[in-house]
Image 1 (tube, one colour):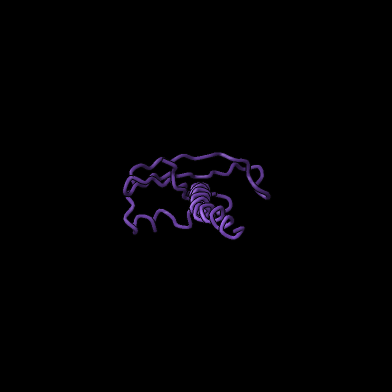
Image 2 (spheres, rainbow, N blue to C red):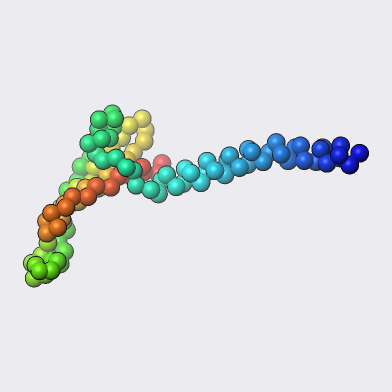
Amino acid sequence: MITNCLQRVVSPVSRRVPTVVTFFLVGVLTSISWAQPLEVGVYDLTRQGWQVTAITERNERRPGIAPYAELWRIVSVTDYRLEKSGQVIICEMRYDSQRDRQDETCMLKAP
């Protein structure tokens, strides 16, 4: 009798637990994916069918780095907006003149 009673109580709960856990995990993973940068750049995205819909460029003037601390360094920044199937990705490409280094970061824009 106790077994039947426990079975009636545990059975509905155990059927709901996977649904609740799945819902929670999907929500967490989705929110994490919005916050983390993508591992691809503008070139890779355009090869995957993404279309560049906007480009903005600007230069940022920053203090120099030793031994050129007396010189201003220029960081050229180019922002790209890419779209595909209603989704939007924003990419930022930076070139630092004194470090002679280019960095690129892309993130999926939240709807």
